Length: 393
Ligand SMILES: NC(=O)c1ccc[n+]([C@@H]2O[C@H](COP(=O)([O-])OP(=O)(O)OC[C@H]3O[C@@H](n4cnc5c(N)ncnc54)[C@H](O)[C@@H]3O)[C@@H](O)[C@H]2O)c1
Ligand SMILES: [Zn+2]
Image 1 (cartoon, protein in one colour):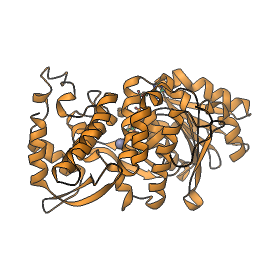
Image 2: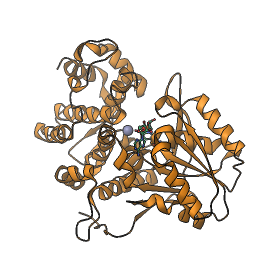
Image 3: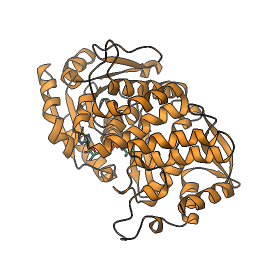
C-alpha cells in the first residue's frame, strides 16, 4: 500500500483549500480531545453543539465533558433523528437556538452526528450572523468518510433533496472511530458502500485491501504491528481520496462529479423508495455501483469478470446488488419486483437527477476497477433498455 499509517496517535489529514484549509483528525477515542483541540484553535470561544436525539443519548455527555475539561462553556440544540430533520422548519429552530445561545462571530458551532446533522448544522452555521465557524464531529461511517469532508451543507426542499444549501467548509473535523461502535450494523454497512466507492473510482489497491480486510473494518479491531488499525485505515484512505478530489474541484464543476459513481442509478432507486428506511442512501449506492459496473461491462468498457468481482464484494458485505435484493415496499405489501415504479417512471427519476441533453445522459462509468470516468454521452434509450432488464431480474 502507499504510505503506511502509523499505529500510534491520531492520523491528521489536511484539506488544502488555501485560507479555508482545515485538518481532519482520525482515531479511536478522539472525542476526549475535542475541548483541547478547540481551545488551541479558538481560545476563549463559546460553543453550541447541534445533535440529534439518538446521538445525544449516546455521545452528548462525553462531548460536553471533553469541552468542560478544557474550560469551554457549551450549550446544545437537540433535534429529532432522521432525514426529515433537514427541513426549513428545523433550520429555523436551530438558527434561533444558536442566536438564543448568543453564538457570535468568533464562537463555534459543533455538528455532532451523522450526515443529517452535519448538513443541517453546517448550513445553520453558514447563515447565523452571516457565518460562524463550525467543527464537524461525524458519528456515522458515512459522515466520517463522506459528508463531513468537502464543505457541502444543505437542507431538503419539497422539490427534492439538498436543493437549498451552501458550500461552507468547517475549520476542523474530528472523526472518532470508536463512536461507530454504537452504530447499527445496517447503518455501518450503508456507509461502507461509500468506502468501496473510493476504491472503485480511483484506487484498485485499496479495493483489493477492502476485499481482504472488510470484516476487520466492520469489527473495529486494534492496530497490527506498526500499521494503523483496519477501520482507521479505511476511514483515512477514504478521507484522503475525497479530500484530493475536493481540492481539485471544490465546487463540482468537473472531477468532483466522479464522487457520483453509483449515484445516478442509486438516487433513482432511493427516490422511488421515497427516501425511506426501505433503502438507505448507502444501500442505494451499493446497488447503483453494481449497476454502473454491469452497464460498463455491457458497453464493452470492462470484462464481465471485472463487474462480477465488484458485485461479489458488495454482495459479500450484504449490500443489495440487484433490484430484487431490496425488500418489498411495506406500505404496498407487495413483492419487491412489483413494487418498483415502471421503467418510464424510473427514467424520469434519472432524468430529474442528471441533466439530459437531447436524449443524452451523464454517467460515471469505469474502464476498470479504480478507473472511473465521466461519460457525458450515454444514450437514454440504452439506459432504458438496461434498466428494463434489471427491473425484471
Ligand atoms: N454534505 C455532503 O457532502 C453529503 C455527502 C453524503 C451524504 N450527505 C447527507 O448525509 C445524510 C445521510 O447521513 P447519515 O447516513 O450519516 O444519516 P443520519 O445522520 O440520519 O444518521 C443515520 C442514523 O444513525 C443515527 N446515529 C448517528 N450516529 C450514531 C452513532 N454513533 N450510534 C448510533 N446511532 C447513530 C442517527 O441518529 C440516524 O438515526 C443525507 O441527508 C445525505 O444527503 C451529505
Ligand atoms: Zn453518497
